[in-house]
Image 1 (cartoon, rainbow, N blue to C red):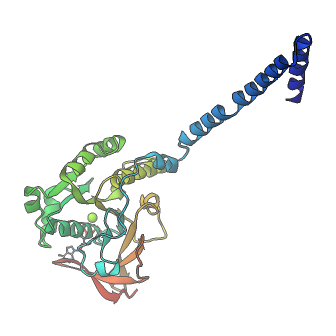
Image 2 (cartoon, helix red, strand yellow):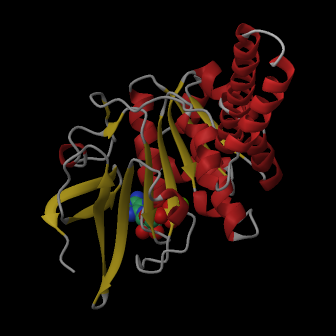
Image 3 (cartoon, rainbow, N blue to C red):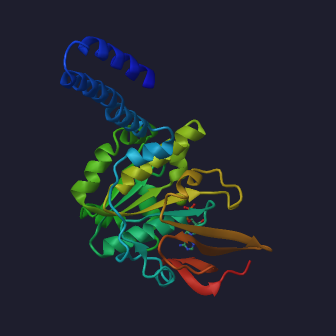
Length: 303
Ligand SMILES: Nc1ncnc2c1ncn2[C@@H]1O[C@H](COP(=O)(O)OP(=O)(O)O)[C@@H](O)[C@H]1O
Ligand SMILES: [Mg+2]
């Protein structure tokens, strides 16, 4: 910098040696202006913009996806599970995404359907999404609890959606696609995905699974409904390699369903592992499944 200035100065001196001072000053100012404008703002800002737009990880990618609704801090969506709402300050937060995890036969499907049925009783539009179950079988299974889903389907309040692997992949690629249209058109208030474990199996490697899970999460998050996702584990919380590892820290609530063996008997229980913005008990409560559905008992589970 000083060298260049000197050079210019000398040149200027040469040029203007015969002329008067004002011209000298003019050239000097020109040089100063050029150096400052060519280096500073534009390049730096450009670089910054380019850097910030580049998604490096799936988490950056997530930030780029639509923000969607914010969960309400006040309104609660009643769960429909007898005895549960009093433990979670009145129900799930409206617009929240909750995960119900448990082993096979722990009651996830019953839990999720009971949650939807609660909405149906209040004339809300609800949807059940699955990747495996046949509708007739599902309707039949749920009818034993007195939940006549066929009736609500005819009324247009209940929507059953069974997706093939190709369909769900396309929906996610399209950022919601037909499912997004349906949720908006029908003004769906409660949605269940049963289960995200089978959904994760559609993807070959861990990264693809996580990316798909996060995309799914973002799609749901852009809807104005309270969501319940079920996830199957092997009944052992230490071995957490299912899709929920990707979703665990993203979801607003995590409920664990237990079906533990004690001697020659199995006991059912529920634990509220996480519920954002809600004071929850650090206890595992006993649950019963009867012909009216799931009831959370006041008694803690005796393991
Ligand atoms: N009418 C009923 N009364 C009591 N228990 C039932 C009834 N129907 C189903 N169950 C219990 O619920 C279990 C199935 O629950 P489900 O929600 O399908 O489990 P998951 O979806 O976690 O695999 C059955 O294995 C059975 O133990
Ligand atoms: Mg099930």
